[in-house]
Amino acid sequence: MTLFDHRHLNLPAAIIAGGAAGIISGFVKLGWENVLPPRTAKRDAVNPPETLMKQVGIPDSILNASYHYSGHEIPWAGFVIHFGFSTTFAVLYQILGEKVPAIKKDAGTWFGLAIWVAFHLGIMPAMGTVPTAKEQPKDEHISEALGHIVWMVTNNLVGTDVYRRLTQQSHRH
Image 1 (cartoon, rainbow, N blue to C red):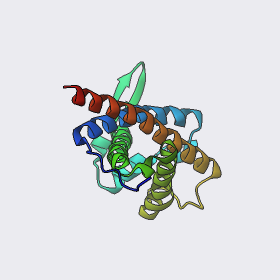
Image 2: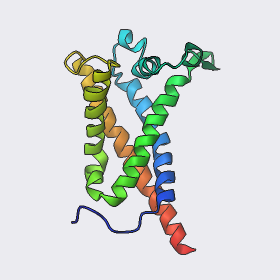
Image 3: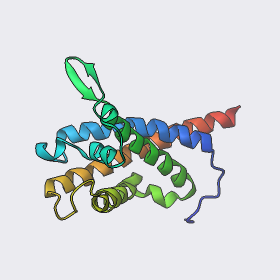
């Protein structure tokens, strides 16, 4: 096995496949967090996407904007961050994984864990968006680590299949 795959990368297909995977995996991660909530109710009152938006100066008029569905008021700004993150990393994973197959080892498990470590234990605590790794509860670490694995395995399954279908179609024409 070589580190780099020298096959041609179909960049538009990888972007479409990663985009589709990121949207689907974003829904999977939301569902996961309903089963194993990563934060206490008190810490979730202002969740990390909201905190990050405040840190970068997003005005309250956008931060507090919401839509109504089935009697619920749902803030949409946090979903923009959630799905933006999910889709960005799914596209990156798809592109890099086509050129460096080791990235997709164990269906993306290690890549998902690396993203969790980088952001939840490193970048976001350093920015003050979330508490330090030691200050985060064990339940949060468990939920986030497993959630990132499930999220990335979903990206792997969906992205790989969509990419294969798109590139097989392009070879037929």
